[in-house]
Image (cartoon, rainbow, N blue to C red):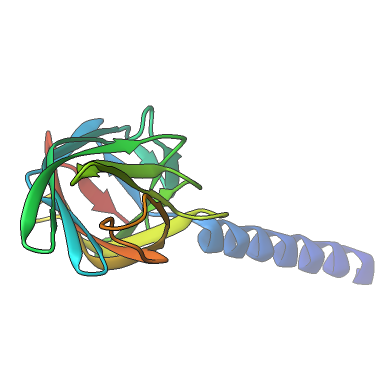
Length: 188
């Protein structure tokens, strides 16, 4: 009788532990496959601000974190430095990730050297690349109502080059609101 009770008790303990482990590892999910787009992305680097009027990235349906099929694109970019505006190029590279943390928060994982901004300012080629040495989590508020991720002043380490009059700093802040189409819903 005791051997049967022990086996039943051990079986129940194993089942409870298995359910607890499954619940602890459950991640929010989102669907359907979508494209996330922004009409304004800014990178502030010291007193200079790079602005891109369009950015987009494909986001496959998944749970937790997912590798994006390609990095975001950034177009129609300019840099305002010392009161002057110059054309700029912003390029995403490497494997970026989208992660749903909950039904109200999410983040992008930017790989090392995953974003580069280049501009010619008064004859100098100015360049900022980040994040430096390791990935950066760029976190924000997720809205199921608007199907959007809002990033506000998220810090990313950078290296800069170009000398005077190029901006110089060790970090930039990124801000954007990405809205998905078709609409995405994150569920617990």
